[in-house]
Length: 221
Ligand SMILES: C[S@@+](CC[C@H](N)C(=O)[O-])C[C@H]1O[C@@H](n2cnc3c(N)ncnc32)[C@H](O)[C@@H]1O
Image (cartoon, rainbow, N blue to C red):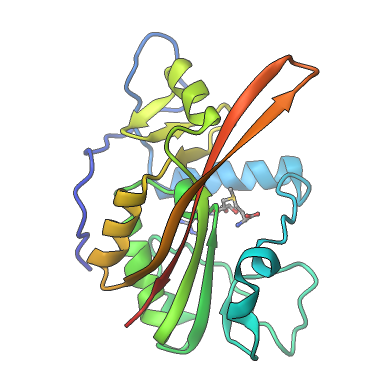
């Protein structure tokens, strides 16, 4: 499949080297990402990402009738859920799910974890399993977020808007334009895209954080 979006070329980066003087970091690929996320979940198990109830709060009306949903949950029922491990940047989702069989894909803080180079392939992959008129419900980090500024200040840049964190995982910060173009180039229609801000005050550390997230809905025609 052809990657349709142009991004800053990425070159291998050895994460074992200390991030001292060099400003622009390089990227070690999806296999390295997998190892870093495995370490992350070994360390935090399922305690790090809290359930923010996005599905009910923001997108409840998408779930009003029985739907085929691409997502997962630890309390799943085996007779209702098909659980599989898949690297969505490199494996074909149709090896696990029937083509054009899914009503809704939730993409919540997941696309930001992969290199922007891989994003077009992932979105095309999702398009293959979505039914016509199926939706992608998207939520992720927005450009200008407090955490982005921190990563920039610590010189943890891999490429434009893409950073590595202290724990070795990566994080991309989306603009509405970049995100919309990404999906449009994969043949999706933008139903809604917006950025929202929240000021969070940490009294213990005496800091005010401007957090920014992007949420969007895309439809497969
Ligand atoms: C920030 S976590 C978000 C987890 C979850 N969606 C949530 O909101 O709690 C990013 C997730 O992306 C997954 N991920 C990163 N690269 C991936 C890939 N190539 N294929 C499948 N999942 C990937 C990681 O395993 C990790 O669970």
